[in-house]
Length: 406
Ligand SMILES: [Zn+2]
Image (cartoon, rainbow, N blue to C red):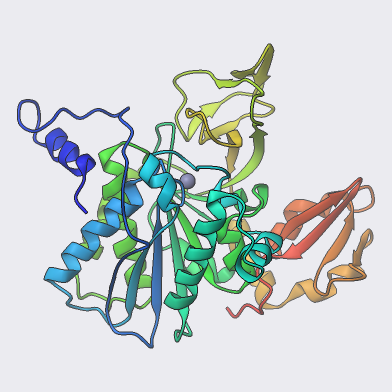
């Protein structure tokens, strides 16, 4: 479905005078089916791209529409299957992040059981969850190499970046995209689709393509999809010039930005708490410790450390005010890959202050008072994420419950 945004986009690119004026603040409303398109042979690798899991983030949907239009005209090189799915259809039709609850916080086992198995529908997003879950099942069915690519955008300005749970499998897909890579975001957020898929052993990576209404957000999302098609084995290597162009485009867009960063702070927002971000912040903008960043009612909110700001909140809906991130040196990534390949996690409970979880296999309890130095960061290196916290104790679970191969 061709909609107003693309017309505005063309208008913007065409310069002043021709076409309707581009209005970056206009809310876009999209009426789109669950399956946006599918191409290529089944039975081998499959790449499933999801656009609009948040209803005010149209760029992924628009990028997929463009992709399937292009593939319709020219399907050269397709050797696996690419499928485009819509996230929150009803929220997209309203042009808002969600209707009742955030669909990207709804993927908990508890809700999935209630909605998909017991068929108890309470919120609007329960329906979306059930329908999208079924569409994902259908899309994955018959493939032993499923990849999921989840397309988002941000309310504030900023460059594109890749988000993923740090498993070796996800790294393989994520690091092919020349844009900053953000680690640790999934761990801060409960019930994300990516987190859910990762616990099922499916390679699943997220892409934030820039500001919601920025026409470039569509171009960046499309570029990331072309690259991922080749990485996932859906597109024969070297057959399409679009892939090389996409790499060059994203690399030029990301020039000067850090390659890998980790989330160090999340500023939570609760409904009605009066959180208002100071104006003018963009993702990856440096902030200094103590800098005034926002207000929460009468209270001032300052940066608790120096770093770069990520995803400052400039929309009414959302549970995250902003994040503070810091660069990770490549050395640590290489070290962690090496440690995971020799499965050093099998002996980690020999360390003081670390014990196995009595009820959950593969999960460890870390006493922060006794194992201060290896609390969270070292477990990150080994491929764990924080599953919970109990006073001084951290509960660390593997990011990917299936055994990883190098
Ligand atoms: Zn989003």
